Image (cartoon, each protein chain N blue to C red):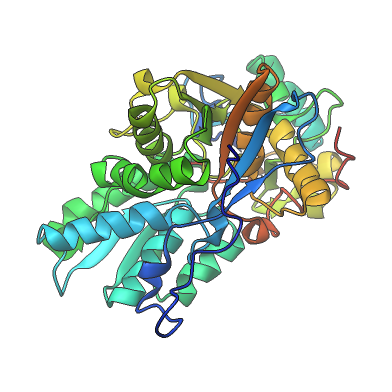
Length: 91
Length: 326
């Protein structure tokens, strides 16, 4: 199981949980598992083509997956995955 | 009559030195530019104008409320020598406070989510402001909460402009942005569109314009979802609602997708020669939606800043090459 940190705007899908568990050998598989556990969350993260939305950043153990293998980045048990909007919101 | 707005920069004095006494005196009097290309589907009887707030000395619309809130604090004796200006901000307000604070000689401390753009971090540092970073996952609401905590720990040390709850924020727009638009359009403005972050811009400007002509329609653009990429804008239903924001004063609120706003930013660059931020893209998407329903009118869309401070963000450095704008 990997630990997934959920940003505030997506916590409505996780019953308010700041961090949840999910599994999968890659980030793509992990996002699918996350959606199985928390239906609807994948379409907030990925577009209709299955690609990560432009304003979403995904980090595995603090590393931006854009600079790893993107959705094919491998995940192992105990990894920490963070979903972070690219912007800070507010004013 | 022609409603041709002044395209020039603020009018220079006709006598005396062409110099300002402080950057603070350069705030406001931003140009209004006619949008002549990115207006597909808009009737010939409708003119569209962009209020280019990037021309403010701090580079954004936020110079106006920052200056007004600090002026107000000085006048009321709440900001006195020895105090530090403290506020939470995701960027433009922080830059504006840092600039005005530097110009007036007051130290500035800002609470920003850790994921604000690199350019913003560097700009506020260049003005000498101290920055405290809040959890990026908590967004601007996390910065608001952390700022409240810092203030509670040492209340006498700080002056908190409190852009979300300070009436001087919207008052700045009532006194400057609104009258400028009224004057620049020769009183012909029929629709005013702006994004909402604190709500200060749309509340103050809208209130002034409706005071001049109650028929003026005031329309807000906001992110269509809580999870979005529109820097500076708030999805109100899922946010800490600012005290100065009064939704009942709006005629309409339009939810804009991040993807549509980004595509509009790319179009404005290529077709109008305007490099703007994502909140400008969102505002112009909303402006077009409104303008397309009209047969005639004068639509003014407020563009909060320029785009050069977003070049390091996902707006430009995304996951893949920028798609051709649709």
